[in-house]
Image 1 (cartoon, rainbow, N blue to C red):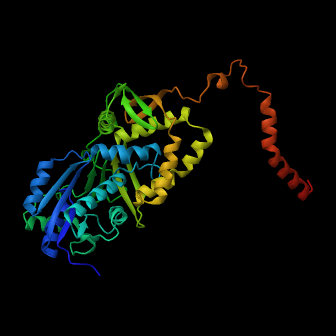
Image 2: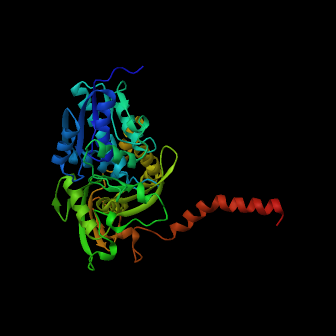
Image 3: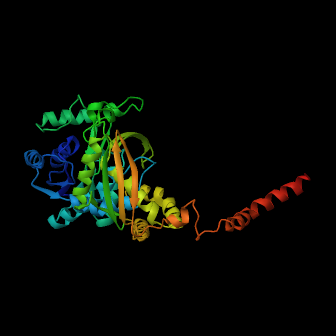
Amino acid sequence: MSQPIHKVVLAYSGGLDTSVILKWLIETYHCEVIAFSADIGQEEDLNKIRNNAQKTGASKIYIEDLKETFVRDYVFPAFRANAIYEGQYLLGTSLARPLIAKQQIEIAQKEGADAVSHGATGKGNDQVRFELTYFAMNPHIQIIAPWREWNLTSRTALMEYASQHGIEVPTTPAKPYSSDANLLHISYEGGILEDPWSQPPEDIFQLTVSPRQAPDEPEVVEITFESGNPVAINGQAISPATLLKDLNRLGGKHGIGRVDLVENRFVGMKSRGVYETPGGTILRAAHMAMESITMDREVMHIRDGLIPKYAELVYYGFWFSPEMRLLQNMIDDTQKSVCGVVRMELYKGVCRVLGRKSDLSLYSHDFATFEDDTVYHQKDAEGFIRLNALRLRIQNLMTLKTHGA
């Protein structure tokens, strides 16, 4: 049985859903609502968010700068794993949710709140990501998910509610789609994007220019890695958040990182999402190039076989699960030698590897060359092939014997 609710901490973005939710919680539960906004690089007017929360009735507002934490502790670990969901999605929203939810629980404990609340719908993945983290952090916390309770069944209804209560929101009937932004990406879904046959309008994109409008000259960039993490651009060491922001600028300028896909949600339905991940697209390609000369073949193949599972755990919301800790520890062990520099060319929506070098490289010119060498005896390959072909020869001989050929 749920306990009386006197104080709620709301994950508040200042968008349509959470602006309405703030007022709805006060009217429905007659409780105090504390608004919490995480600055993870969405580049919104934080003062405006604070003012809107105050005007809508929040008793207290937390706005916390989590950009470095987000990139260092969530984005970089996933990119050490080359994580990608269903071959295209670089998990921008998925990686942000556990950080926001964890911080929300910490504020709830500090403020003595009875419950936490979020703006995720009952059809999407975010409700799962938020709530799995809530329970992992505090198994006794009460959760209010308004989209699963109220009778406001559409975003049109929410806009009407906001208008009636004088709540200023960014969504309008002219652009009725939902977006989510952070330092890793911007996502767009819903509204005019729900028809998977319809091309997204060009004016929807905020981080990237159209590849057709990108510069006619390519740009070359060098990325330095240490233990699988990018640490410098063009030889200049910078913080994780600054590095990703700079790569976003470079990638966006050249139209890199647009993705339009229909994905499988955890709750069972398919949904269409449009994403911009310029810096992440460059970073993943560079990281894989760095691994290509520094990681053992069999270690790489085992790790690669686990990428779909890792990505699923992130996408489904199991960031704080024991299996995730196991996978991350194993992956991080593979990254110790992933150090060096990768040179990339950015041009018209494409990032291309031009070169890679490392003091820990496993690539040997002496072994790979087609010229004369003394370290590899080509005659040895004959026995290698015959041994590997043995089972195939036996299988064929048995077939011939069975059929009397």
